[in-house]
Image 1 (cartoon, helix red, strand yellow):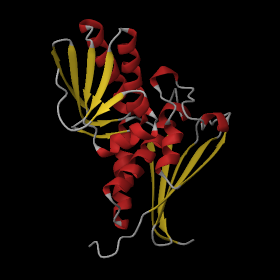
Image 2 (cartoon, chains in turn blue, brown; image 1 turned 90 degrees about the horizontal axis):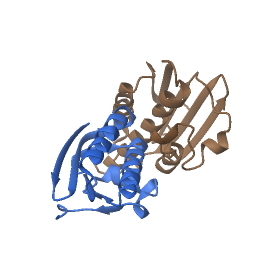
Image 3 (cartoon, helix red, strand yellow; image 1 turned 45 degrees about the horizontal axis):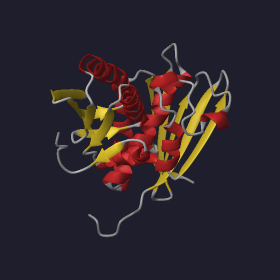
Image 4 (cartoon, chains in turn green, purple; image 1 turned 90 degrees about the vertical axis):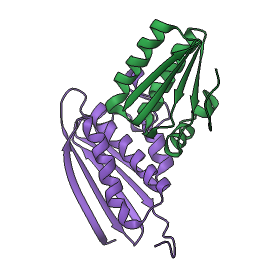
Length: 108
Length: 146
């Protein structure tokens, strides 16, 4: 899985491209947490429009970065989940914990 | 319950094989003409089971994972993922949502997702001997789709 990051006006937007599973979750989590530590954004947006697959390792990543954002007084938003990742987010009960938006860019 | 088709494969418990196992399951399931959603569910369940072997069954070494798939009764896909690893000491605890012995990198949702995405899930385990996860999914046969 690849990540593409963009930082603008206190929002860090990270696009996840490909498949997110245990094989790549740990390094992706560390990469995002490093960026969070350096930039201290008010908002982290995870853009899933190019993420074709995710399993519970992806849930672990999202919960971890969500916790980190809360600790820093910020928030996590997940945008544009495709059907299979959305199914996993739903089954894991994450919809009531993390804001998820579909259809279009998050305006900052 | 005679199988109309089956496959058995064996691979080491390295994380690079998680994606491979998903692709195998999808490739085998294709003959039942599943929808994209059904394929997604099957791939996810397989990913969870294989990841459990890599993370929990063989935490400090590389062991063997066996994956068997078969089709029977026309539209039923059965997948068995087996290891000879550590085994689960408290199975009912392990199957609880959010329970994990894997630390903060794990969500503890693996079994919950397998249960949600497949029609049936059966787990057998013995400490020091290994674990076997059997999952069943019936693929709705759509009339006139091809």
